[in-house]
Image (cartoon, rainbow over all chains, first blue to last red; front, side, top):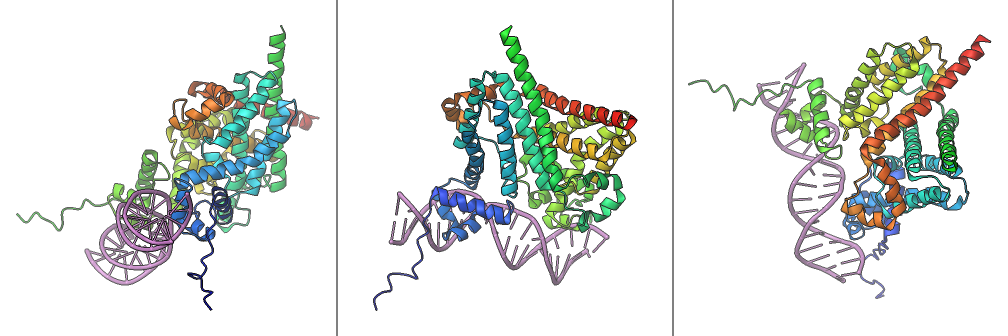
Length: 222
Length: 222
DNA sequence: ACCTGAACACCGTTCAAGT
DNA sequence: ACCTGAACACCGTTCAAGT
């Protein structure tokens, strides 16, 4: 009966950058960003919170890694899209980006509020802009429409997550009665209509992009 | 020499909803959202942090009040605009909203990430939608373009605040060398060009709004 | 009515120490 | 190399007590 090795078998933590980042995202998805803490993450990982600091220099750096992970699904959407039409590429990316917001509603604000300054996000942008260049779109036009369209997607997805609390929420019920016009208009913003509204606004911008590309090509041909 | 009233004259805190909210915004503007705490705010107000709780039930409620305060400048822009052109009104509001981001860069993410569920924000929306109604724009069209345009403005302003760190930032310098296309395109996104890009994307959406309003009026006339 | 003081259950992070 | 434990300087919030 000398089986008792050392201690209650404390089940090696088995840490790695990937596992920490993966469970961090899971914890954020479950509890939300406000509630997320390295100490809770430690409990989930089966280690002390301080062990995380051997892999990531700070909570901030860990969140950057989570951003990279979230963007990877958009990155694969870009890799799969081998179209020779940059407008179609931007359309696909826009929908993939919004999908991230639906898949990870509680983590998504990270994408919208933190700067893209990591390996993965730079690689993504480099590839996207390289595609535009290959199709003869100049850098100024690329910059302009990337900014306009990504801003729109980001803001739209964020607004979907932020509200509304629904017509039956007791905290807004009184306000809805006092401001009937605001309440009536917001009736038009239910989930299924938002799909259509998002696509509409996106197409408006994509059409402007198509016009700009067309005009530049004519100018060049002259 | 019986002047010594009671204690070292502790200078009455002089608290009120307004003063607390005002100094909260000042503190956020100075230190940023992450650094903001009720305890620091207490120090600034000259009281214990717990005194704040007599005026606001929670930090969250206080931040809602800050959102209201931030939106008030957009609200006055709406009140001043007595135009009979809803498109011009939306244009003015869009620029006023972006101005808030420039005036309060560290507080602005509150506007973009928190739901509008307060007195002031409801009143604002009610007035804006009432104006649209008076000009014969139906609720569906109002909802659609309000959502599309506000999303764009919100996302655009947020992206301006999030980046870039500038070409000389040591944390991104290495990445810029490795991903030259990403770096080259981002050269086109300096401050003065962003003014023009913002206006461009906004006008694209406003033109779509004008077209929708026009089409609806023709349909109605038929 | 308005504010304080002590307390509770948390944080992120550093650092010496363990294996 | 990888992880723990104790410690530091913080948090938001509750609640009894003071004026």
